[in-house]
Image (cartoon, rainbow, N blue to C red):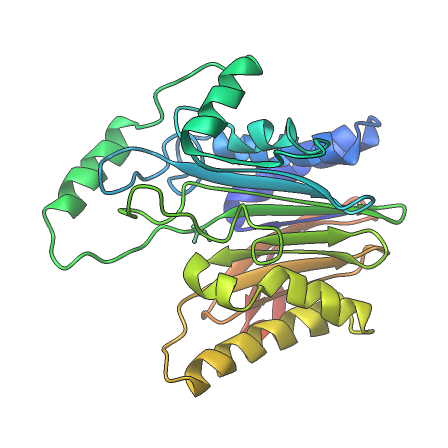
Length: 292
Ligand code: GLY
């Protein structure tokens, strides 16, 4: 079993997912446990409850989950008033149609499925929104998506959840709910997911690019490094300054990798030997340091 997840905020959820897998919980549900632990934590301001709001002061969340066995996926975008967007996305995963719902439609569906509407904006998030609103020009920030991947016995699943960019336009959707850029899972190969500025991640269809490179024979680490370096270089070649993006990857045998175009990207790995540890990727993933 291998679990890999983005940012330090996923440490506790990764441990919970591991315990769930050991008890025989299905992979998708164990992964939801991981993501939900981050969504519900009011100390994390880029995911779920207490996420930083859009320009109107409303928290709008994006999330998705994908099953690598059958390529089924469920996704929501611009979802308001729901603390666990990934749980709502999961209710769509085996639909033949209507796998991706946005805005009012996503909220209507969530309520029909029995999810309760809740206030998402905490006092702390509101205070930061009021301070930011007073500043000009606007600087978009706060995009640390929680992404999780699990590989076990030749199966892989992937999931993401985010409240997106702080002060984003109402209705703006990033990469996180998009199968291809934000996440991808194929149990014949492996899975990958991305965190960072969605507008750039979408340009590189980054998660699918990593899985394709793995399908072509690269290790998860080499695939992650190559995909991030290639997208960074392509954007520069076209005269753009790449924004931040970081990725995680796992193959169907449980080997993993991570890469980034920022100075340091912390991520969590729980491995077959029972150890759950934080690592830091640097230099496009060519340097990986184990922290504890
Ligand atoms: N990666 C999250 C976003 O851009 O919304």
